[in-house]
Structure formats: structure tokens, C-alpha cells
Image (cartoon, rainbow, N blue to C red; front, side, top):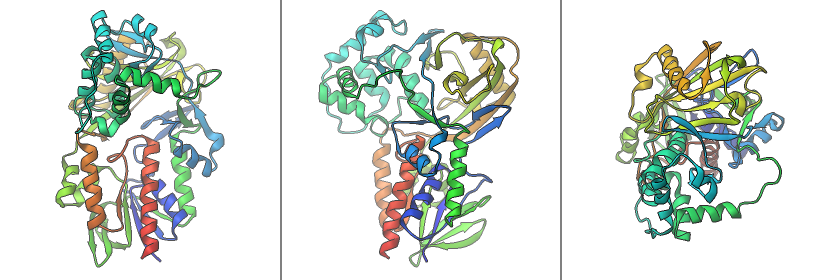
Length: 460
């Protein structure tokens, strides 16, 4: 019987194990350094609160995760977010996001003309997009360079950067367009203008009738309940999860993999590595894999605060706000969690979740939990009226947790993949350090690794 090691019991590793079980009868060891499954995913429940400490939800249009949840028998536990206006904090005040904008790109004239987010000159500069001829993209460029050229600096800083850097925790002037939003470039080239391209794309999307539906999905008992169910399912089907097991090295010899786990050598026919690049880069000295030794990762923290509803005066019908980079704040965004997710807080309570940590700053590293709470509160007081102290706070640090897809990333990953395929047959790399950072993307990469490995195992 073939033996496979899946390194990492986060969402990528557990998904890989699940799909591998469906396609081969290999014996699977899941090796996890910490004492729990889920990696960055962690849900905290108490007194009627269900609070995400890591990733908050996933994009519903990426259906693989919903399909997996349904296969696990969790269809009844899926919930969709409440919609509402989203806001951008710029020029020291909250502005509603202009309606009809896609990732900050305007597709409707009236709301855009009316918004206070841009000066008249800034709005005129956006209109230039109709007249600037697209150049074919031969090499990768940064997201910042692309948008500056199309829509100008002001639109980039006040509209687009807060939205995009929030997803990737990235410096927009280093972030790779090809790895993150190639669709923008395709639409621009196809239609001669980015705005026109996005408008056409938006109008050709199927029209939904009735109340606007939320774009995000969650589970009634949090993302951790999905992870627990996945771990339970793969274990029931014969996989073994080894917690508190640290991998210190991997060697390929005699058509097998020798994996050092807690200083004991174990042997496997195939390996799926599903841990962050900051971890696995230590196991390889090969030149093509050195890219991951230098690949940056941003440290972020979330600061959760719970209040009684009479302490917080928030009349906005919305789900939260992001913050323009040139604002004088430590936080980068805030979710009005109880408004976005009905299941997250008991009636009469308000739950706020602020995000801290920008690329290149050391705020998360240099401050204690108490200091981070103070800094976040100081910023929130500029944007909303809050009285008194929170009932409780939770600070979660995710050190080096946001892999940075800098310009050229996608091409380097391709080189690594081709090299690994030749030099390390039966070894696959998957997870947020490669193709995409969202939870469904991680499930998809786990499935792809499992499918490819199953083919190899069944052939030999």
C-alpha cells in the first residue's frame, strides 16, 4: 500500500487529504506542527458570540468550498452575509463607496460624479481612461502602476488601493497584476478602456432579482466547524493526523521520500506540502526554490471588541469600512461584524473587528496586545461614536501570514513547479503562497495536488 504524507493540517492540507482519499487507496499521514487543525482559521465561541479570529468568510462565487461543505453534510449550516453600504475612510471622514463600482472602478456615472472621495481634478483624470490606448502587456507590472496609468493617482489612493490591499495585505506598487487581477488587463485590452471593459462585463453578468444577496459565505458555528468536520471525515476514512509534529527536512532517495518528523525519519511514496512558504523554504537548498526564501509575507493582527449596543452609536446601514493608505491611522479596515453576520453576536450586542498591519511596518511586532487595542480604539473614535470600555477584546496576531505576490510572482512559481515536477516526482506544493490566497483557492489547490498525486501513485 502506498503511503503519503500531507504536511500541514490547514484548509489546503485537509482538502488535499480528503480529495486524495476519493481518488486513491493510499495510507495518509497528516503532519501538523501545532496542536489543532485549521492553520490560520480559528473561531472563538462564548455567550452567544461566534467570532472569527483568522479569515472571516469566503467568496460565494468560488463554489468549490460550498460544494465541499455540502459533501460533508453541512448544507444547512451555510449562511450568507447581510449586505449594506460599504465605506471608505479618506480625508478624515467616512464616504460611502460609490454604487456601481467594481473593486473601486466606476461603472456608473452619476454616483461617481457625486462622490466626495475624489476632487473634481481627480474625477477628470479618471475620465482620461477612455482616451488612453492600452499597451499589450508583455511582462508583469504592479497593480499600482496599472491603475495609476489608467485612472490616476487620486483614484488609486482613495478608491482602489484600500480595497485591493485589504485582500492581499500588500503594497500595491509591488503587487503583481498578473498574479492577482489579470482580468482587469484583459478587459482593458479587449475594450480599449478599463471602465468600459468593466461596465460591459458587469452588464453581461446575470441580473439578480429581488433583494441584493451577500457575496460571502460562512457557517453558523464559524469556519472552525467546517475544519473540524473535514478533519473528522478524513480521519474516519483512515487518515491519521499527527499533531505537535514538526517537519525539519525532506530528502528524495531510492524513489522514496524521507521526511524528518520530530527528528524521526519516516518514509513515503508521495508528499503534499501545504504549509506557508516561510516554513517549507527551510527544507530545500535547490536554486529554483530559493525564491521562497526571499518572498515577503506581511504580519497582521485583528482586534475584536464587543460592546453593548447602547455604547455604540452607528446608524450607518453598512458592513464596515476600509481606510485609504494616506490616512493617519494604524488600522487598515474595520468590519461591523454584528451587522454583516447575524449569527456573530447575541441580540443587543455590537461586535467590531479592526485590522492592523501594513506591509513594511512593524506595528504588530512592536506592540503588546493592550497597546494594539488602545491604538485601534483611538482610530475607531475618529470614525464612530463609542462610549466606555468594551465588554471584552481579543487580539490575534498572524505573523508573516499574508504572502506577498510581488511583480513576476506567477512566472517564478511556474519555474518552481516545472523544476519540482522533474526533480521531485510525487511531491506537490499547494496553498496560499502560490496561486491565490482565498479559502476556496486553497481548497482548489489541495484538490489539484491530490488529483495529480493520485495519477502518479496509480501509475507506479
